[in-house]
Length: 164
Length: 450
Image: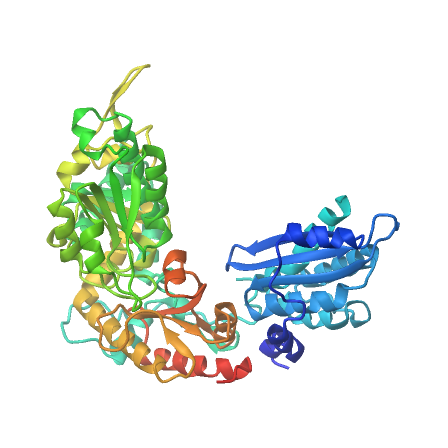
């Protein structure tokens, strides 16, 4: 596999077009009220990659506070950007939806560590699932931000949702 | 770039012939360009396993050996603070520093004292904006009143400006209460000159515009715009960053009041740029940066300032950069700016002709046959500019991707980002062809169906 093919793996190119979880977001207040009626906590985060102008707004729905380890019940997003950032947001929704917050954070930490390793850490498919396809990105430091954009949005939105 | 793990530099020969040390007037050919390339060591390397194809000179140009040697020679033989101290080295350093000013001034058709050194073109525009700001506060006395702005006054720019020629004016408007207006851009990426005649009106105090667009590559109708400004006694500021390196430019003949350009885009080092200002205007302007080297007498309450250009050159100057920039000017003069311009015009037309043949590729700005600089920015349907740039980089081709510091223009043309190939005197037609051929492979690679 050439460097370029390892960066742009088929699954990444497919997700960049399929864009799972990408929707036209309703106003946050509306979504929050609707979620609250079902006992969900809803929050979102807007992230911009200032080097290229890529943007993502990711919205997290979290199960009620009563549970010690809440579950990520839903993830939706909207955004514009390169194939890496779009595919990453798409795969994020598939990968993290349904996980507990503890599981989601552990997976996020693993993803980030792998991406920042400059190719030294082989992605663990057991842990990362389809997100392991971003292993090639870690050899391109300029593109790590593209892959991390939606995951940073998730991290910020999660903290916000937990505070509700 | 740390990601170029596979880059391997091919050591350039230090004994190569100076291909450009001549003053012929015949048009440049690929054979001449191959000789010119020998003067640029950085071009002779592999990037990602391919010979480097450098098509990002619109962002920053490469340095010929003579420029690097000029800087090294200065540090080896003359390094001293200029305009202070009486020892031999200080005198010599001052002489070569001022000789550099003379050379750069002559290159753009200015008088020597009409060139103020700055760190770059951005700083040059900020120097103007802050000087006008200071004038608006009453600094500089009655003579500076012509630069003072307030409520009811208008600053006019265009919709195609680089952020460097937009944000300083936005900020000046915010500080002074003046209003910022702009000349809109038409769908074809050119200025709406009909609208310009309305926008530039009796309240206009300043008209700032780019000489050559860093995105569309078009050349502004300077004479028409200057005439609009003159009609209402407005000052004109020309952003010549993309033209001074690539075309013969004579600021006096263009009849603009101010012009700015950057050293690193014209074969010079980073950290040096210049502001041109008509002598009688500079003479009346209050300073921007203040401190040492720009004063005559100082007491604890106040100071008297030197005449231009020193009035605007506070602190220790960019001495080695100015000297290296003068060497870059020598290189360009010896090659001949007419020949450089003609060669790049040819490359520019070759670019747009080739781009028109690639399905799904949209050129930003006017197409074939319209005068343009040797650059072209494109949108590849269905593929983000960063992915385009990544694919090209994998083939050793360096281009600029993103909004090129011109977000409003991109928005106007309906895109968020684009991919720009920009040439210089060291680019061959083969390099343009390689760029075009590689660009044509991109949509299929990313699975974009037409």
